[in-house]
Image (cartoon, rainbow, N blue to C red; front, side, top):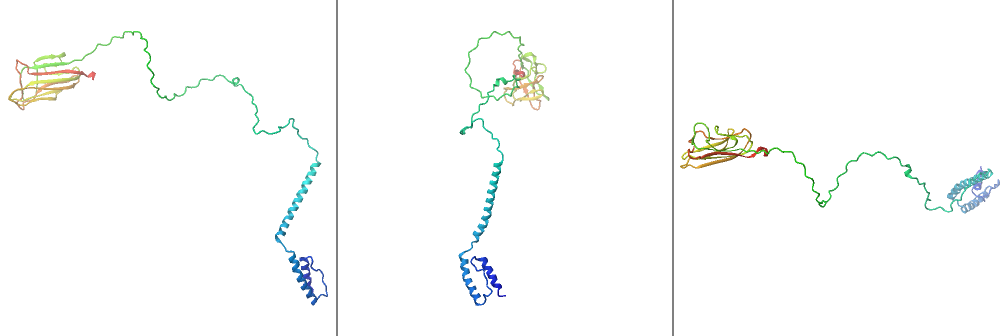
Length: 305
């Protein structure tokens, strides 16, 4: 029981230091053993402090050790590979037939290309294409100077004979020498004197003008009033009153007139009538003088309008 701690200390000390004692004596017991143990404890820290441990360096050495082994192995494989290459027979090498250029140029070398005559390869002339669309008109230029007068041309041939010139006329002027008094109905004013009646367009029996030439006409009516009586007449177109001629009662008689322009069509009728007898109404005249006149004429034919 007393030798086991001593043997354990000796084995531990032997593993930790190279100068630690490795002997044992069976008789070293009691005070000698205690003295030896104290002496060993005093010497053991010095040896431990004299060689401090560095875990980082130990770890680095442990890491570098495998790297050195791998490098040595790679170098042996490389030498072995070159020895095998030296044992193989030599291969044939390719030799250039011309000397390579001594220096390389910074610019690409010019290589001439063969010239081909295009006229030899030209084919036959193709068909004419379709005409394109007309382009836009350009701006109008300035007017040029007037050219010289050309030579006089030859006289032309006589043309065909044209139609005869057609003139249109219509006119009338009539008068009355008898007086006229109103009654219970309208009375057409008849005329007994004919001054002008071109182509008989005014009918003396009916006292009406009949239009045979359409166009613009001018009409005029002149009467002599009766003293102390009214004068009341209408100028009528196709039964419709157009204008009126009127004069009030007076102590003396006077001349009264009315005129108008009308556009007439063919077969239109124009005449003068006396108003019916709701009041005393009369037109004065005598057999010696003509006091009442009615006139009209064509101003412009409708074909010329």
